[in-house]
Image 1 (cartoon, rainbow, N blue to C red):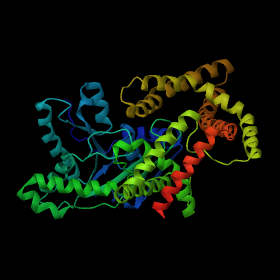
Image 2 (spheres, one colour; image 1 turned 120 degrees about the vertical axis):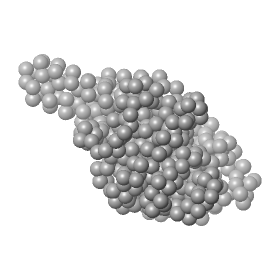
Image 3 (tube, rainbow, N blue to C red; image 1 turned 30 degrees about the vertical axis):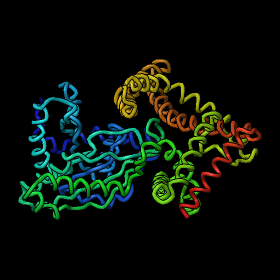
Image 4 (cartoon, one colour; image 1 turned 120 degrees about the horizontal axis):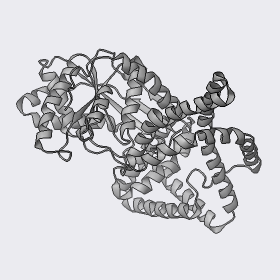
Length: 455
């Protein structure tokens, strides 16, 4: 195992890499990256243990990194599962990225797990220096909007840090929520919400007497703080139905409030209201809850039959507006084709290799990593050389590459707009059919049931 000494020391090489990755992540890969309540981030130099929900592989870590680095250029240290450190080359790269390994029982043998004690002490010493340490207490990501239980590694680090400082460190725990408009596709929105930092001195005496109950108490407090900001569909047997219900109810809830329906943080709040209302309905009126789930199951079946989604079902758009959108799409087609064709190969390569990963929640991680680090930079160098040679002017080569990059981003956005337009035309074509009327009636009934609970 390589040495992780001084992993927390600021590095100019790290700053250089971040200058590139911030653009690749915040501007190119994601359409809109937003940090909500950044004023809750403790000042640089404050011992801070950052915790968050974990759903989307390394992209969760990237989101938190850019939230913290973008706030005050701090270089936080992350803790990740130890099995990814097995190869020295990978371990060296992860160490450069300021990532420490922690081994879970399912990752290795007892000898590996015993290394955790040293890692926990190392992590505590990093906090002692006033650095920021990031850990995902769920110790693994899951596919969907729900939270798993918190593991004791997080609380062990927190208590160890206070213990070696005679319980005077005043360690702050900063809860975050990472929320995606779409886990798997580029050019979607991403929001990081910062909760209020908290301390845990009320558990010190408990820890001094018997550590394990103190670990559990801190886990419960920390999980509750993260859960306050997280859409948590904790009814697994009805996950698909409730997940679709959140999409149905977003616009009605936000329109009633008069808030921006396109802002992802607002959509997340609406989803949380819907989930809370579903829990209330299940607890207070189980028969109505069962009827609602039945309606949602039928609704999902009809969506599949029609090829529509909740956004396009029963959406009223005038024929004139649709024709106007079609005209604009035709006019922008040359821009789309230029951007799409000039970025087709690196985009395809990144997706091709990413989809070889068995875990679907790691696809965006590999797609982003391969694209940002390898396929797109190498491809743009090739484009620069070829276009410069063909034109006999280096500046034309640079212009060609710049235009390819800009129109590539535009093409990705246009592709989504074309997809929405196609859905609207399909809905308009089906609007006089019995299938479409059934779908709309189901949606209306579902919304009526929810409005009765929400209001």
